[in-house]
Length: 388
Ligand SMILES: Nc1nc2c(ncn2[C@@H]2O[C@H](COP(=O)(O)OP(=O)(O)O)[C@@H](O)[C@H]2O)c(=O)[nH]1
Ligand SMILES: [Mg+2]
Image 1 (cartoon, rainbow, N blue to C red):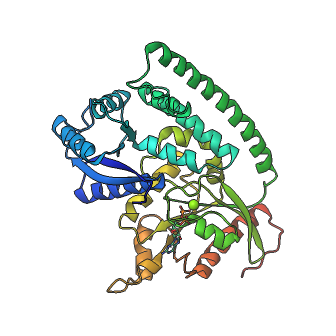
Image 2 (image 1 turned 180 degrees about the vertical axis):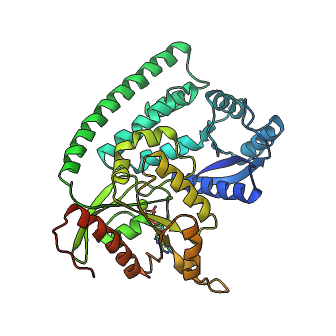
């Protein structure tokens, strides 16, 4: 924990397996860390469904509150999405007594939206995130209040706004949404013109769970300088670079990674950024093969790809970070593992370490073969060598 970090408690329900819940909480803690919030405690409860009023039951809630008070916790992070009334009830519960700070309730969507807001660099990404944020806030008035309060520089109003103020705030948000949608339309037009100029070029997109090494690979293959960090969602904006392997040129794009339960509004408003993925001829699905739950992450990515209309694009499965597997005993037979992934429907598989630049030639060869096929379809008379 760093000096200025704020403290949080994390809450999750125990679903299928306790191990999976631990993994979900680890991920939630990592998300929190990304915006400078330190996870000081974790609470779980085994429930078939979230409590409709307060997400967890009354007894558990009191237990959490005692801990939060003793530790002067400012944030309560819930690993699921909360309804407007759950949010309101939890806010009330944790702020029932006078104290010098206010406890804020974050559900998973809000946490992810906040990270995106912090990360977005280009006008396009900023507009997309702001739109998603406003759409998230509109039905959650108490949340919205605290957010507007934050924007206004924290006037210190406690206990939520009066009906009249809420109505005003609602109008402000609606106007914002309309304005942001207009802006996005304009930006999309410019991007369309840009994309037109790229017609006839083979397009390849890096996709995958967040923090698996997509940007590191982008930098390696395209000699780009995209931010690559051990942080969730280091890259939110789309980057496109021209790459030539052998004498075959193509465009390579790197963009936002996926995560379990990516907020619905975010996917919606990132449509135009995700066009880079949807319109690609080939996807490089990057996996952190050293992650204990990488199979679940592959499933999440496949599902999200299908959701954005990119489910039928040819894929090369790039299993990254093999350097972190090398210590295992007995040593892993990567060639044998390829059969396993073939059964999952991945025809082309390659094991690499982007950080250590291991097996990158095999990856380049695979990309070359696929891109070349596509290139010959676009330019049947263009002479491309069979070897790169
Ligand atoms: N050990 C190891 N770390 C890697 C490898 N590739 C990337 N990383 C690290 O994983 C983290 C996330 O990488 P990044 O490219 O930002 O992932 P992205 O979110 O998918 O774009 C960074 O700290 C990278 O240095 C690898 O092959 N081995
Ligand atoms: Mg990245």
